[in-house]
Length: 218
Ligand code: AP5
Image (tube, rainbow, N blue to C red; front, side, top):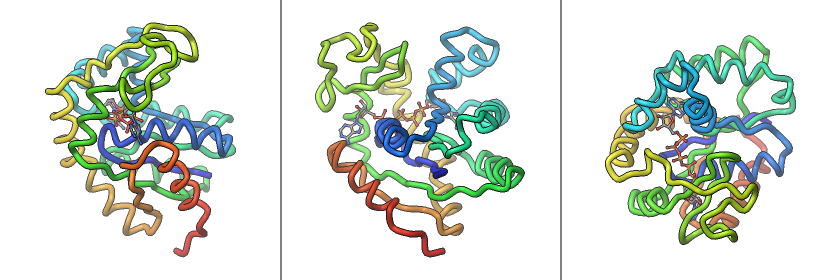
C-alpha cells in the first residue's frame, strides 16, 4: 500500500500515520521528522532547513525532494509506505510522480484530513513531542502517562519551536497558498479520499481503515 497523508498542520496526519504504519506493516516517511533529525544533527541540510522551519515556511523543494527520493529507494519501502507531510507543493507532487513512474509504481490513495482552524490551533498549541523517538502527545487530548517525560523512551518532552502562535499562523497561510492546491491535483487523478479528522483519535483511525478497505473505482 502506498499512501500520502495530506492536510493542514495539526490535523493529525502524524498521529494517524504512526497507527496506520503499524497496522499495515509499512514504512512511515515524515519529511517533518526527517528535517528535525537533520536540524538536531546539525548537518548542512539541517542548518539550511532550520531557519525556514522555525518561521513556519516550507523548506526548498529541491532539499525535500532529494530526502524523499533517497528514502523511497530504501528496501524497507518495498512493501509500501505512508508519506506524511509530503508532497506539499505541486513541484513536489510532480517529482513524486516521476520517482514512482521510474519504479513502475503508482500511488494508491491520498487521504485529505479535514479539521477546523480553531481545533488546529488548540491541537498545535498543546502538542508536546519527544525529541529522541519523535512520539507525539497533547497536554489535554493525549497526555503522556509519564507526565513531562516520554512514555516510550523517558526523554523530556518539548514544545516544537514552530508551535508558537506566530509560526502556527504562518504555517496555516503557507498551507492555503502552497499545499491546498494539491487537493484538486489528486482529485483529478481520482485517488483522493476526504476524511473528517475532527473526531477523537481512535474514531478517525477506524474511519481511515474503513475508507481504505473500499476498492478504488477509478
Ligand atoms: P511537519 O512536521 O510535517 O508539520 P505539519 O505538516 O505542520 O504537521 P504537524 O506535524 O504540525 O501536524 P500533524 O498533522 O502531523 O498532527 P499531529 O498528529 O502531530 O513539518 C514541519 C515543518 O517542516 C514545516 O513547517 C516545513 O518547514 C518543513 N517541512 C516538512 N515537510 C515539508 C515538505 N514536504 N516541503 C517543505 N517543507 C517541509 O497532531 C497534532 C496534535 O494534535 C498532537 O498534539 C496530537 O496529540 C493531537 N491530536 C492528533 N489527533 C488528534 C485527535 N483526533 N483529537 C485530538 N487531538 C489530536
